[in-house]
Image (cartoon, rainbow, N blue to C red; front, side):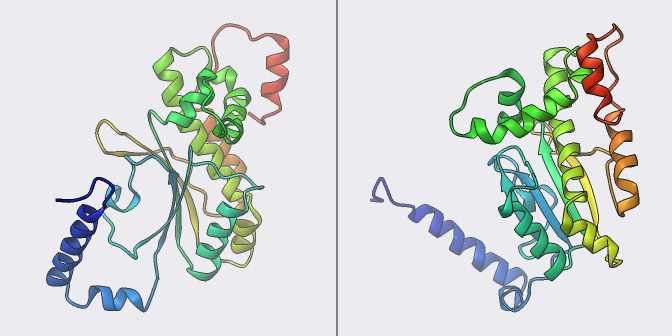
Length: 235
């Protein structure tokens, strides 16, 4: 009988999977052990329901992955920036995908002011996105707010990556690398391209502004202080 604290069932599943792959693709693991040449860097949420390789049907070795709560990338996060720098400078990835997902617990907590603990400090970054674009967000009904903020958060992170020194330097030396923004649907398993792809430094501001403007402002006049704040975001 398996002991309650044993993970033997996972080890057994791993061995069965490895043996199946070896039968179907002879030499796969031997080749994989000697090289890592992914074309893609996936920056996604830690949510267990959004596994990078499975979502885009890529095998081990085909996608480099970084995940954190609410797929946030900020210029003070050396963890994320180190992953991006290694992927761009050493692995020479051609595409970076920021992949959020609808129903993201971190985004919803930031939107509704739900306390979750230590992660509240990390989620302040998402709260900042909410406040920056509240004129385009807060007039929506609840489920529309939730979906829109999940998308806006992705768009913001794409902008952060594109303005990082890593991407700016890569583009300056002529390296071909694009940054994309997607949002994944838990209910249907499909990704939505948010139309915020950036391929050079000259595109960043124009593409960012165009993506944000797809979320209309409320029709009624905003309070004066909100109008001033919203004008500062460059819309």
